Image (cartoon, rainbow, N blue to C red; front, side):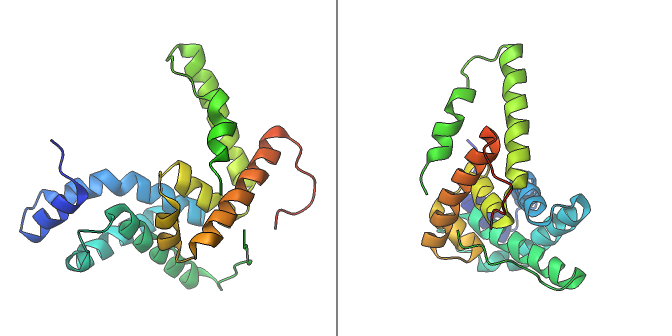
Length: 194
């Protein structure tokens, strides 16, 4: 039976040398994807991923094992990404103040139970279209949607990770779904998303 994140943390703190590499292996891809969505640059995302796990290692004693490790590690990744942005250039963020599980409804026709080659190919093409559409969204919306549907985080976890009120996260989710639908269906106007 696979150990939980909390069990692995306790094992690390008890001196188990294999426990931290297990945590790292379990969460490295997710942290990298998270950092990449934040920075949109592969090498920077790699740097942030490495920095995230260095910070996690140094602060593991502070982790409350009754909390969600994934939320904790993503919060560290967010902070490391912000630190990198501050080092590279002035911090320029547009104020994007913008719920529903409508994406599930939107994507339902594309999720098939069969794994036939044509089904797999079609699903990959749709995934690529959705990825392009997500890339067209403002960063605030893109981040919330990706955390919700790729990383499978709850709204509360997203809010904790981003340091935003849950209502703001829900609002960004709802508006992001609307914008994503417009982009996918091709009825986005030429106007700005902000």
